[in-house]
Image 1 (cartoon, helix red, strand yellow):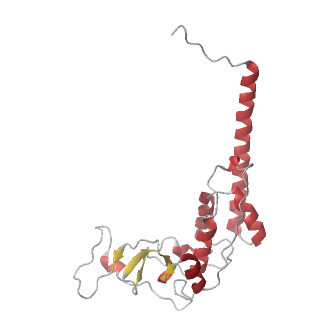
Image 2 (cartoon, one colour):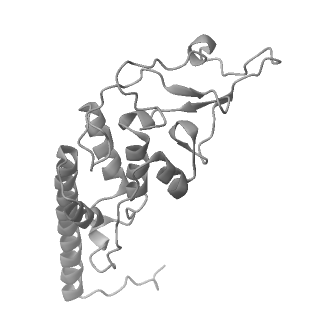
Length: 212
C-alpha cells in the first residue's frame, strides 16, 4: 500500500478538466432548453415543412412523444403538420377488426384524426436521433423527410398496413372466436362483453374508417 501513488495531476490539468466539465454542463443545459422551445412550437403547430425538418435534429423521440400527447390533451391531431381537431375520440382502449377477427389496442391511434396522420407521425418519429443532444454538434445532420402519402392505398404501399389502421407488426390482443368456438380466452381484468361490442360509429366523420 505504501508503494501506491496517486496519479500526479498538475494544477493546470485540473483547471482544464473543471473547465471542460462546466462547458459540457452549459452545453447540455442550452440543448435541453432549445429542445423544450421546439416542443412548444410543435404543440402550437402551424410550421412550414422546411422549418419543421430543420428543427428535428435538436429533439429526441421522447420530445416528439410529449408533443403528440400534449396535442391530444388539447384535442388536436397528434401529427404536427395537421391542423385538424379531434372531433371523435373513442373511450374504448380496443378496436375490433371483424374482417380479421382480432382486437387491437388503439391507445396511440386515437390521438390522430386519421390513419394517414397516424402513419405520417410514426414515420417522422422513427427518423429522430437517439444520441444525447449536446453530443450532436459534430455529427452529420441526417436528411429528414415527411411521408408523402395521401390515401390509404399509399399507406399500405409504404408501411404495409392491414385494415383498421394497424401495421403488420401490431400484435393482436385476442382472437375473436368463430361460430364453432364456445369461449373467448381473455385476461381476468378484461371485460368480455365490453370488448366484443364494436366501437360506436358517430354521424359525423369517423376517423377510424378506411377512408380517413
